[in-house]
Image (cartoon, rainbow, N blue to C red; front, side, top):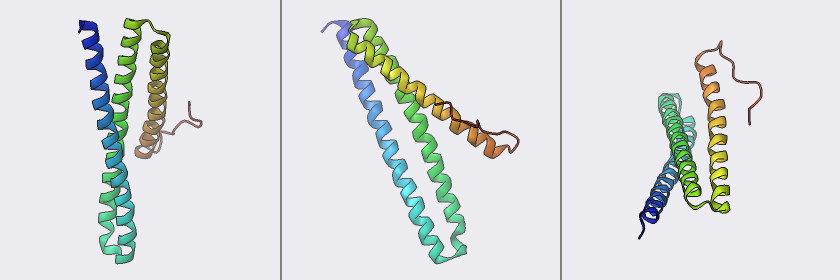
Length: 136
C-alpha cells in the first residue's frame, strides 16, 4: 500500500474507534439517567430518608451527561479534522462536502455547548444571566 493510503486507513480506523467510544458513553449516560429516574421514583415511595441517594444519582447522571458531551465534542473535532485532511489529499468534491458538513456539525456542537455552559455559569452565579436567545 502507498503511504497516503495507509495514512487514510489509519485515520478512518481511529475515527471509527472514537465513534464507537462516543456511542458507548452516550448509551451509558442514558442508562445512568434512567437509573436516576427510577431511583427517584423508588425513593419517593420509600420516604425522605433516602433523599440523599436521589441527589447523588442526579449528580452522577449530570456528570455522565457532561462527560458524554465532552466526548462528543472530541469526536466531532476529530471527524472534522480527518475529513478535511482527506479532502485536501483527494480533492474529490464529495470529500470536500463531507469535510464542510463535519465542520458545520462541530461548529453547531460548540454553539450549543456554549449555551449550556452559560446556563451552568448562571446557575452558579445568579448575577450572570444566560443569553436571552440561543445563537443557533
